[in-house]
Image 1 (spheres, rainbow over the protein chains, first blue to last red):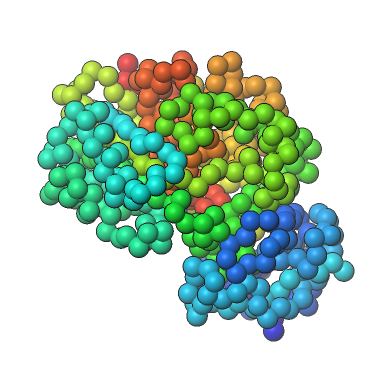
Image 2 (image 1 turned 90 degrees about the vertical axis):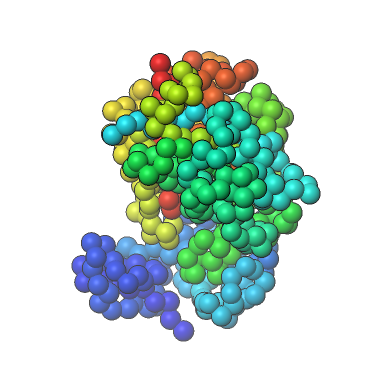
Length: 119
Length: 386
């Protein structure tokens, strides 16, 4: 499994990727963020979660540094013992929430992904 | 270009409307607005319905045509406006465009949502369905985005947690005087700060409720308005904008570019600036959003809005810029498609001098309606035609 971000022709990187990047730049390559560590920008623990989502659900926005280029991502955290500035690494999980329990068509997207674990 | 006027407004009781559904709520607001404006349904040329999710909440689609039939406004052209939580503001923009373009001489806008028959989890999921797939699968909700942003704001700007709670206290105090508000109950600082955690650091009273309700406005060219009344309000500036759909991709989590851009556009169109605004309705779905909009609209420097709230700058009766005299989404309630229209109703009533115990001195008012977590925003500036 990979956590694919997209590098665009102008050198910028986003997660997720988009058909066009900043200034209309076209995607140039994918980068697997799971090979990097990241820093927690902010976090929260949600105690009122939708159907099929773990409760409580600790989430963080993290920032990766890919060769000097910042890339942010959101994800679940493996623990509620987390602080802003902590270093985390992505850990693959087969099912982040229960497909079909919520409103979204289960076949419309992948349900596996990465949680962030403190290093 | 002739100015666009508002000659009537209405709002149903917001709250839990058991046994009533979206079509009932829309018809109630629509009929009341026709009566308030003194306009015959047969004279409505365009009929817009602001609604985010009647299909998802109720399995009822086609609400705009159903409403035209229910209030006997046929053969009016109809359109449903969905822009998530900013559907109401987007409806004002669409209605303004319909009149300003010359396509319609009488446009009725009705916004509404029926939500409370769903569980909190189900309603939260309907709203969260607007998120990108990489966001949705994490279980993130709009309240989670608020928690993430609030923590960042408090840490970065060294703002006290109490300042957010004061937004809730103020808006609940204002809501007491709004007979249509869902919660007409004051809350004190301690109650807010000790309420259950929802998305820390935010607690129950930092969030607006789930609500049923509808609101409506009648728009027409100024020349037509004068045929009906000497007292009306004009839309002097309006603009809409978007920000990144994926929230974490924003360079600065505390800046909502959609607010900045739409506000700038509305100020430019009206020839006004932040210093000219006498009263404002901001989208306080979460207390942190009141800070971000105050800053994005130029009422405060970045990271400084909390200080103005602490100083009482935004209080209704004693502040220099009363914010959310209606009680805001926080106390009035937040029926998604109705909220932006209801903001317009409050500013209209303030400028007409019809706000009763909520009345402030105001010639120029502003409303800012936010969709998603700042994903799309509409800012409207209204002025009394005096």
